[in-house]
Picture (cartoon, rainbow, N blue to C red):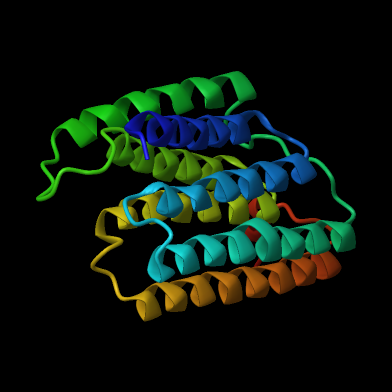
Length: 214
C-alpha cells in the first residue's frame, strides 16, 4: 500500500482526536471515537502482507470491540443517565483546541528525538501516536462528565495502539487479543460505575466526588 494512503489515514485519526476537543454532545463524542477506531482498524490491512491472519484478526478485533461494542456500551450508559451534553471543565473550547494544536506540534518534536531500530512504515506514525495519546489525556483531564473521561482514556489507548503497530509483526496474537479483552471488560465496568454514580448522586460530574466525606 502506498505510504501516501497510510499518511492520509494517520492524519484523519489525529484530526478526529482534535474534533473531540470541540465536541460537547455526548453522542457526537462517542461517534467520533467509534469512527476514529474504525479508521484505525484499516491500518493493519494496509501494511505489507496486511491480509494475513494476524493482521486481519487485529483489524477485526478493533472494529468489533472499539468501533461497535464499546460505543454501544457508552450509548447504553448515556441513555440510562439522561445526560446529553458535556463542556470543558477547566478550559473553554477555543483554549482546548489551541492546546490540542500545541500538543500536535510537541508530538512532532518528541518523535524527531526518537530513533526506532527499524524504520516505521510511515514517517507520521510516531507523531500521530504521540498526538493521539496527548489529546486523549487532555480530554481526560479537562472534562467533568465521566463518560467523556472514559472516551479520553480510550483515545489514549488508540495512541498506544498506533505505537504497538511498530511491533505488529513480532507481538504474539494471543497477547493482542488479551489486551482487547481487558479494554472491553474495563469499559463495561466503567459503564456500570457511571450508572451507579448517576443513581446515587443524580449527576455524572466527577469533580463533585472531591466533596465526599467519610
